[in-house]
View (cartoon, rainbow, N blue to C red):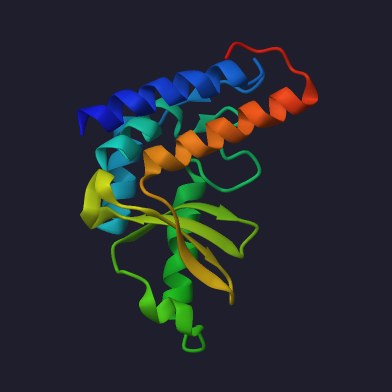
Length: 164
């Protein structure tokens, strides 16, 4: 566990470096994290709690353009609950684990989630409406690492000179 926490701290420092000054980090309060855990009636994985405390309200370039920060996370949970409760839900929702936490929703048709019962060992899954529900990263920390790597590729292609 300590390895994933230290790695996430390092990755968040990288995101801060790769973000513009106009894209500062802002973390959630302990009460906001507790509100999310109460809403889903589960303990969130330690690495994700670290993310929330460091950047849960604003995460620089990370997850930009998607609903992935507080208070939008509350809407993400509602989005999943409504779909799971719908009588005409699609078959993909039949296979959703009850401990799924939707940490990112993009434009209402794509959702990224992990399973809270697995803690930091949970893979990240991507659900795309009517299409797929696939594992895309071995953990939340690995997913963040992939996002940081993509930011670096974009910066390199655009000729941005930021610290590596």
